[in-house]
Length: 298
Image (cartoon, rainbow, N blue to C red; front, side, top):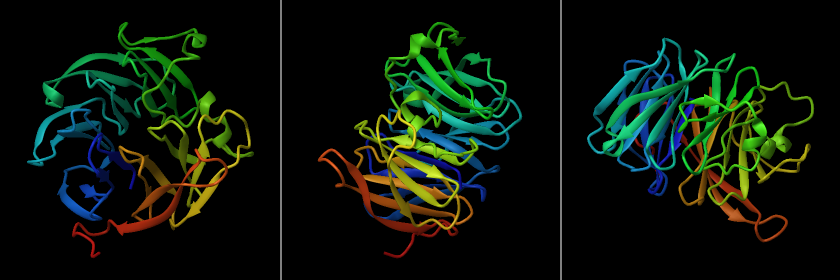
């Protein structure tokens, strides 16, 4: 399992995996709302800010847009012939960024509440495959990471231009923070890490904490920002395989983590605790096996 996305306003989330299933889960009821099987397997996804559709990136370079109510594919496109690694809507819903293993980021104009897409441009500058990306709060800029540990910044509104002067992006505010490389998250990397030990991270919507998924079956929770090396963290066990992705729910009430070969989803309840009143931490977890499309028993 690799793909994970939470709804912008409801207690639901989406998962996609190598069995070609795309599943919509309910965090409050702890059950499966629906599940469909695609022709290829999904690796990433994101909900449109309108909340009515979700986009899933596949291993062939194709991506599809699904209606949450009818479950039908309402739009699809193909970018290159390599797998897609990240799908990310701009916070205002005007753009969709598609990160691919062909080293490009494809940008689309989005209209009709996520039901119509047209190519806007392409970000060309990375020398390895795209791993993570985030939009600025004004929806005009992108920060991206790649497989060779590059951090690049892009002016999307100005025509998908690479920003050579990185100092300009020093104080820019980001709508989300999922990039594993960056000044704000230096402290999440352990000494001696080889660059692939962290698979994913996610900043909470409150911008107080950041959750990290690593290769050693652990979920970590750090304070945000985390600019100092060897920062302290809470560590949580539960997965039996490498943790591939983490994501906070829309109101930060829960953290979701998914495992690779253990094919498990853990739902962590976020509570206040630790040092200081503002410290937040997952207190407990509930898990769901995704090996079957049937809703789990309570």
